[in-house]
Length: 234
Image (cartoon, rainbow, N blue to C red; front, side):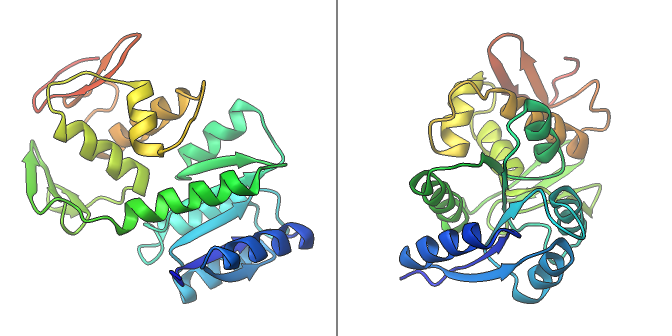
């Protein structure tokens, strides 16, 4: 049993009980919050390995909770999977822009959700490569999962860090959106290549001096992306 702690944030009791039962059956320890304010406090106090976060919450909604978790250095790196009854692309994109690592729409398959949870935690617990890497004004410590720009710490979500890492490890090679989806998200994500574009844009905003004219992450139109240490333009 892993006993890794997962915070479930939802105000629907039957959803909470369903998730609690199945997560505990899979070997996880579960803590629960029924509203947004409680979710933020519990996240800070319990420091779970992962948060399952509903969007429609009393107090603060899931978007606000996600923003506050990402702004706090204590909780910024906790991966978040958003749960919601909404299925519109705009809602998905907004959640991803705010720093969510994944998104699943209710009603969902418990088996699929557990598979996603395991995939995220497996990547978190994997052994990172034991090297540092520098380009431009960026320094990355893959061992510590840390990145700095001009000697100041940059907070990346788990997915953003993994995306940058795979691009760097394949420096000079074009990686299609489909390959990036498969390698980073770790499961079938048919038709959701927009997810990659959102994360790339967010990543550029954090590491590029001018995200509208990126120097390092190159767009190969209609195909995907390529990392170059000195690339200029898009």
